[in-house]
Amino acid sequence: MILNNEQKTNSTQKDKSYSLIVNYLPQSIKESHLAEIFSPIGPLKSCKLMQDKQTGYSYGFAFIEYLNGEKDGKIACEKLNGLQIGHKTIQVTQARPQSNETRNTKLYVKGFPDSFSEKEFYELFCPFGEIVQIRILKDKLIAFVIMSTRSQAQTAKDHLHGLEISSNNILNIKFPQTDSRRRQMACSLTYPSLNFYTYPIVVDQYYLSSPSPPSIKTHSIYVYGLSQTVNQSELSRLFSEFGHVSRVDIIMDNNTGLSKGYGFIQMEKYDEALRAIEQLNNYQFHGRYLQVRFKNSSNNNQIIY
Image (cartoon, rainbow, N blue to C red; front, side):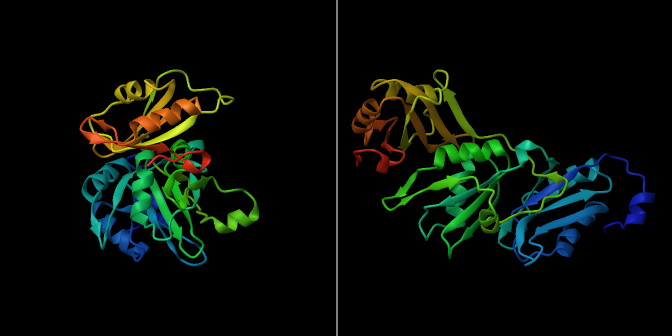
């Protein structure tokens, strides 16, 4: 049951506002159906399915608020998080007030293979934080990925822009432009006063020294095939044999806390980075053979296979 305005005014709210965000909803679900799922826990103050105002296209998430606030909200998180609806498993958690961190979290992606699926996008971006929405426009071969926070979006962009997916596909990732043409292409969302919740960034970053100043160009190396037991200091020592390493990032699984099996190395000198690639590609490390290459081989003079 959703209370009308008069009931909301006359009712005494025992708990302060506690808004929930529900992610990964199937496209077919209606707002009334969503209310039926959440209302058995307690009377609803509001239930808002986020949709395109003109087309009715569902963005796959909604906001729920209970009249009893935190009390019923926590019960809903406990009982309904992970509920299977159709082919989707929904995620229910507390929303948080809008801030600068929850604005401008949308990434514009090009350069991926035409066969790239939503699942592959999820696996690519999820190590950098919580994904709110993925939308692929197959006819234009562009995609939009919305992260939970600006810092998560920036981290994903920093690591994935220029990543070579295949010999013919190099990711081009940026924040959408503000001109009218870009705004029309972007899948604009209208957010309520309470916006996305935040998950901790799950990129395990290890700085060996202060980050290089912007004036110093670094060369990014992509390393695949890492054992789950490898830590940043071990990987740093391995690459430091060939030159100065300014930064090591091992990408972590946000569910298990273990390595996803790949990472990035930043080296300041091109010749040292190239020598490391030549020596460490197909090198056995912690029982696994590494695949090592420049993050974007087209920007370098040599590709190591």
